[in-house]
Length: 150
Image (cartoon, rainbow, N blue to C red):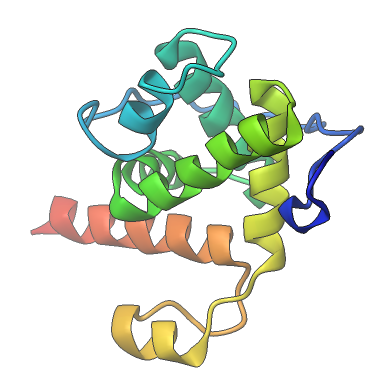
């Protein structure tokens, strides 16, 4: 029996647009999204393929149109927040008995439905009210751009 609180995605899970920017490989295969999916027995693809798929689906969902945003996606997935996102993906695969692509798409939809809170705005500088996934990717994109300019 499917748990309705998991908000499982049943159909229409494919994104219609994809980024033209290259997918950046993980810089942190021992933690974050990459590691969580590497040790997941429910994945139906190799870890690098899951990484590429997640990056492409996130890019399409948030309307990525720059290399900086692709860096933000990579850094988000490599981070503690990426680990939380991957836990959501794994929970979708196990609890909803769906494939990897549908599990990622469902997690993206859920994270886009959440909003950045005022507390997160105060602590991390992400504007309150933004979709959660978009806000965190933008946060990591800005942080990477600031490091590059130093």
